Image (cartoon, rainbow, N blue to C red):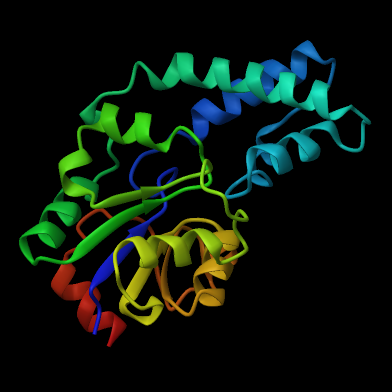
Length: 214
């Protein structure tokens, strides 16, 4: 039985990936580094520290310098996030969250981002979400299963009662490592390991998902 849906945030319910790209690119330019949209794709679903390491491409920095750089990037990102509105939800996201609430199924946001609570607040969906597990949690980031397992624990559910909705390969890997089924949003070459692959949530309804998941 499925009792909960665990949603990644960026690229699933809203698209803050452009904000992340702009913030990382601004930092890279200040450091004299090249950072392309292709580079940005490699950052999808990984932690802020891992993202910085990928951006630096082997350039050595101390941990103090790394912390300062991550703080700068986050400051640039938050400038953009604070402009978000409920209209920035991706098509189908609000409708599916509403159906889950009406069906008395539990919901959680599970994101590597430390800014997930602010994004949820700006999108106006806090009342549709039972729990938020984010990058502030004392757990390993995806593709480790820790964040999803913590969400199941907070919802008082066994892992196999939870379905993950993700747009990143690392998230799909983390979901399966946690013993959960996964719905992958996006191209097959990125999320093809998921139990069900959809282009996005537009026009997606709960009953259809339950049937497709068996």
